[in-house]
Image 1: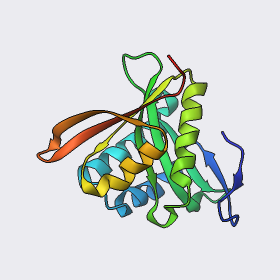
Image 2: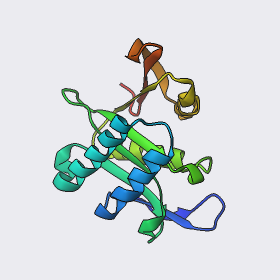
Image 3: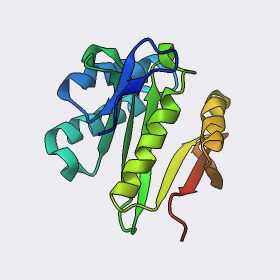
Image 4: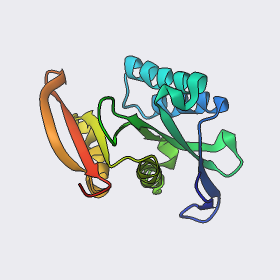
Length: 175
């Protein structure tokens, strides 16, 4: 999928690869240990993993898994994305998660850049990302801004009272 390269500290070569059945438990551990997701959200993340493992790309969910080269037990992060139904060239980034011990090392940015390149390779032109306005998501919001995503919509009280839905967008190919 992508050439292997060294991590920022140069200790372990990292690679991004497709989803493998052995990744399910590592993904579950990352989503749970992040502390950001409730039980229903965790179940949803795992449903997407299961559907992608069962149906492959026909599921409409594509996965990018970041690991130490050849060390499936060393999964540091993942992204799940797919085409937005009823659109031409628009993709949703459903999940991007980096394990707590691997954060602040550029891994999330690396995953996001991979997703953007893959979307373009697949004929996509735009990525949309939805997230929460809760204070605990402040780092996530900043991450999307630094990656060049614009906040294009805010739906007040969407998830619950006081928790707005934020929608970010980035054009990968000029219109």
